Amino acid sequence: MKKLIIQILAIIILLLTVNSCSDAQKAADDCLDSSSDCNVEIVVNDPETPEDEPIIEDTPEVITDSTTDIEIDEEEIEIVIKSPDLEPISLTFLTTDTLYFYDGQFIEQPNVNPVNCGAKCFTDSDQRIIYDESGEIVSQETLIVEPSFILGDWIIENIDPDTAFSLGGQRKDYSRIYFQGVEQGNWFLNQWKATDLIQTISGDIIVIEGNNFHPLTAVTGINHAKNLLIHDFDSVNRTAIIETNGVYAVSWATNYFNGAKDWLFLNGIYYSWNGYELEADLTENANALWGWNTTPYLVEIPNGQNPTLLSAGVFENALYWIECNTGWLTRYVPESDVLETVSRLYVGDGYRTTGLLYLDSLKPVIVQGKLYFYDGSIWEFDLRSGIVNLFFGGSGEVAEW
Figure 1: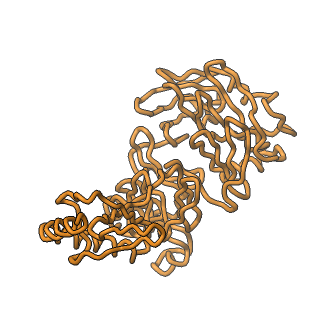
Figure 2 (figure 1 turned 135 degrees about the horizontal axis):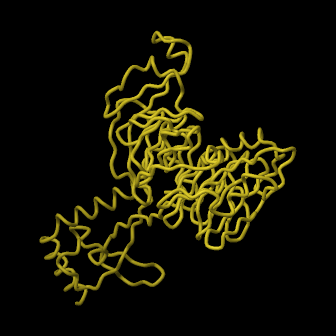
């Protein structure tokens, strides 16, 4: 009798909700037919099914569970479509032609010739794609060309020697510059190959060509450009302009400032690798990092070689640099003014020629307390535990997501 009443109620509800039923069944079929990882959950409802619950079939059929012999009407079954839980991306890894997202596992992306275009942004051929925290596509747009480098409205397209020659140039490298889809100047005049495109905190856009700077804004006489910008550099009169989110006219007493080309920022102060500080003004011989200017150095460097320092990043109120000649990771703690070695990441021979090679290839970055760097493969050094692990068996570049 109870089963008959339930069937009568189900038929009434079916007449009121047939459209939603059809949609639910279609969603389930689509889920099962697709290649996505969605889940279908079968839920047995209370016989007094609310009117807004979907009904699966027009004609009630009985499903018998052979293990329990309990009869369940199909009207009492609800199909729930569940999207898979998406883990947040912690970092990205970019090889010469492949993009990976990393959430504890490498997730290869189908992007063609991917180029980093900013926060949660990578290109796919001539498409600029913006992603969310979980690596899902938020938006995309078509670009004027497939970029070699891209930053905001600026695009750099490197032209290889053979292509340049076919277009009427010399058989040399060139770079073509676009702003908002319009070529700037004439690529014939840019006989160099871009290796990076950066924007300083001051807002200046600068193309990097090895150790050379090609500003796309009005600054001249650049001695250093990364986040902090040093320009109008006068080594004779020892004056310059330093720009961050402020503009500082500075002077100094010794020539050590000529080599102050690597800086880290912590608690409102910029620190150079060799002992300068910039806050409201430039301070010379400001801290223990000054020791890198004269022997004996913190680490042993043979035969009168000069040290080669590369910034690795900031973690837990400490500044990290790698001495590239030897491979030593060093830490400077401003609060205690202590400079110390942490661990030897690789065994360098101490010569500056070796250091300069590592200066270009290491590409260190600190993400969530772990230092990633390249030495034949990508290695992961845990700054808390001191444990080093192989992260990726090949070359590439890690970036924080």
